[in-house]
Image (cartoon, rainbow, N blue to C red; front, side, top):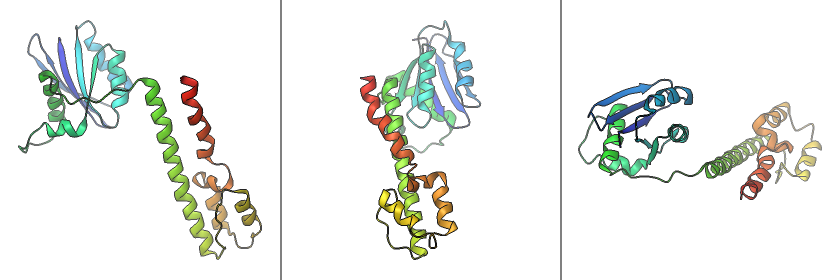
Length: 215
């Protein structure tokens, strides 16, 4: 292997540390800002360099970094965060972006990197859809709880389900109680779950159909 390196991920920059195995020279630096375009430009330097491999910690942002490494023909190794941190040992050392990148590179050189599985693209897409659905569902629940609290503050009897036809009918029957504040909350994007325009319900069929369509 000609070049072995590590990349530490942050939202503002990517810090790299790589070793040229032939010359023994170590290069360190940063890719700023941390986005696909600038990373792709950085990786262009490894064209025709022989076998190249980089280790990336499996934290937020790893997906696009791994995709760009693979696109450039570079071996991508996804490090498991907790086990990688444990490999530092008990000795207390100052933790910096540069030291993190060096730590990844050194583990990869020694063949001691705790690796995680890199899922194929269709699995990553399925994960993203399910997580989006979960986030929307949690937002809907929280917003409906706020609306229920507002209704209770106005003295409206408990409505078991604001999203049901019966619940909507009960709201319509009490226009003198449902004040502008309630209507304002129901009209907000996150509150559209209470009016039937529910992004969670709209997204669910796509999630349930997606695995069948790609099977």
